[in-house]
Image (cartoon, rainbow, N blue to C red; front, side):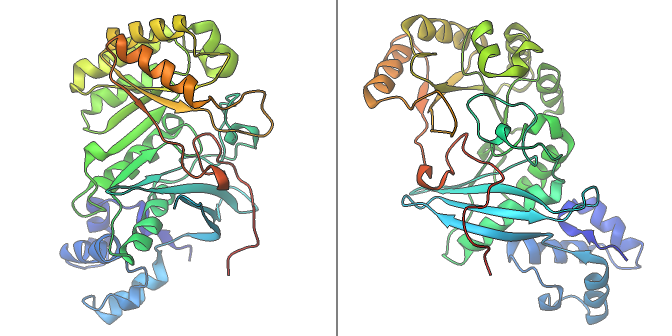
Length: 354
């Protein structure tokens, strides 16, 4: 018998599963509490479940479906793990990287939604490798759950989630949204919806679809240039979806949800850090009532781009703020282990973890 993944289930689905096995509804709540609140991943350790039921669950279900291959820790405390998943559609396991970014008062998981990425953006390491398909919702949730268990052992907890790892979340929309709901649910990891951010390279129809869902998650759009022709040079997807259609979708999102969109802007010297770039970016941000998150470019091999110098960052930030734009600079974390923004790829860097 092929075992099913527990992490793919939401509460109503799990209740149905138990009803089919003549078990009361509350068993579903008990099981999920063990997994998400207590971070217990062995059925036999779930002592308030009947022994016969534990045996049945062991035969029919699995909790963690992946295998941790590598765990690396940066000098700044950032942790990157490489997880290997067996898949029915492939003869060999597929690998994905995921990152935990610790800070003084917050611990953020940067989750991957695809095995690789089909978008092939010029600045991103993920797109340089092969695209091998979508992750299931449970495989996305598992990334966060592994970090939560690690933090729990230190008396801490996962506080924020960003869907900004490998892949384009909106090309795996159903699984991404299901994972976000599980992470937010009272029976799940209980992460506030306002601390969950979904990032997209800009798929207008899917931005509108998310707006219609009326979910309180945050939306970030990877802009990287306020000019259509420049976006096309570094983001092949831009040729299919004009910037005007993305901005119209962003306005629709704000009008439907009342939530500001974040424009993510990779800082690339010699490409998008001029005064004209700042003025145009400010104009777009005002038009759609967005804030701007500046991301200093992180080195990717091979690439003709370089990281901005501190003076270049400060100048561009000051321009935007003088133009009245709410602007933040994302601090680069984990660069020494290739865990920073744009550096994730399916890559074994060490000996396998025992």
